[in-house]
Length: 390
Image (cartoon, one colour):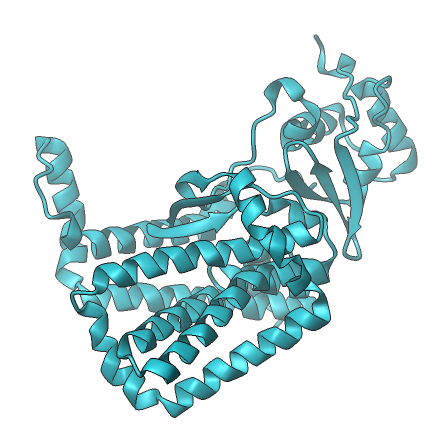
């Protein structure tokens, strides 16, 4: 069949809503897939009625749009870029590309039962008041017990390390239940809780993709909810420490605070990144920041054209600086292992001998993985021949 004769259909599972000042959010409710589209693409999709073929859709679009598009471009947008939405025979479930080797260990049905009693916590006045309260209590306790925190942290490496590991696992699940409980309270569809790897680091995650359909304030609450639950647990640990004076509760308290700080990092795709995305209404913040920075430094004019460009360029510069500093810290921690790693890897592949101590190659492998990933993300735009903006 010629592409001009293809007839896309608008499923009742497809919804479009305004997202920001100039974009729209296209959602497939059953697949829980969401994508941002611009006004021109929204205009193109408005002619899909299950009767017009692709050629007629192109003609209708070109009658109203001065720029116009070719039949090939219409096909690329509807059946390639948006193929999951308009090609049921090729539909595939959402792939969270930044998580590798992921799997669900707590299915949706179980976490739904566990989170159903938390809905009252996520009303904005209650949620933000408690969040500030928990944060204030934790901060004050750190200041009052700073010396003990520093001295007792070595207890983490005591024989009770297995107990600490069990606590860390349980609190991580509790953290994800916070996200799911908040999403559930706002009527968003959620999945289960799983485990995977992000930048070679083991992480827990919860599937709350459907929150893209929610207003910005509700998305912000969902993305804060995990940290909210962490700070709630930290306050419980403070109470236990006050009544028992047991140092191990202080160690657990430190573990939680460290995780909160890591999660607040806006330069990696943890909670802090998604919070910043929602506060600024900027999906794909990493990519948009990088594109803005490239455009800014290419034009040679150091003045910014808008506040948004200023934010995106500054964010990209800070994000790149953070990555480079992190790579430098890895390099300084094991320079010999990092420089020797490519030769070691080649030797293992060539000889088929993998009898190595994997604990000794974690830092080198992480360094090279992050370096190549950073270079790929930074330079990949230079090898594209054409970019179709949707």
